[in-house]
Image 1 (cartoon, rainbow, N blue to C red):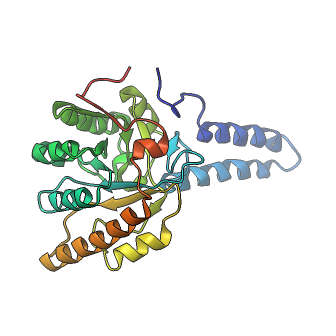
Image 2 (image 1 turned 180 degrees about the horizontal axis):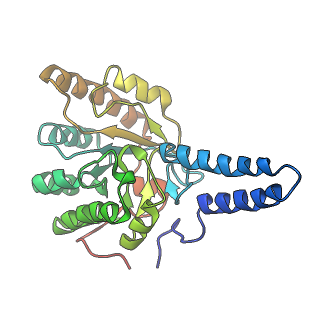
Length: 273
């Protein structure tokens, strides 16, 4: 049985391409055949822009915020785990009793299985964020893309968890992503709120920036990359402390699974039914 939200019908890209073709044919046969290029050019522009619009389900279904009517907010952290930063983040989440989802990079998970165990032991959930966080992953051929995602699934299965959600690096999608995810019974999830922290290289006033932008139903994208200096790490800790304190007081944070109305992962690494 497929999870809610997953389907294998025609994508918006396929429907738009067909509409562009059906519009172009009669134009090409008409009095001004040169106009036939316009609907096709428009479709091409959409295809070029769509990969960089993380909230748009153009090439495949993409979850980017909570289910309709859900007023909660989900915390998500990308790119880890890292020994220099993930334990500190876990300590703060535990202090404020906040649930989070970690979209982990496969090679980091393989190098630090104890951190995956710590994330799970604390009750957080884990998603797939590719094996090497290749910024050009969506430009790779179908086999390379599928192999990268599968490799991370295999690493995490050995560590006792099977993610059901995949977050593409930088939120970029492509037509090649849908068959790769379908083969692994994964669904794409991006985000609705990000503050462009650049992997914790831009953390100035992080808490204030987050609080200014957050809206009910948001999936918040943050990172657990270690800042580049000891001073930066101290500052990042202080900013997270202030942010988590405020969010815990407002009782706004819910598990990602509750926000989107479907599971994030399966414990034990077993394939979903």
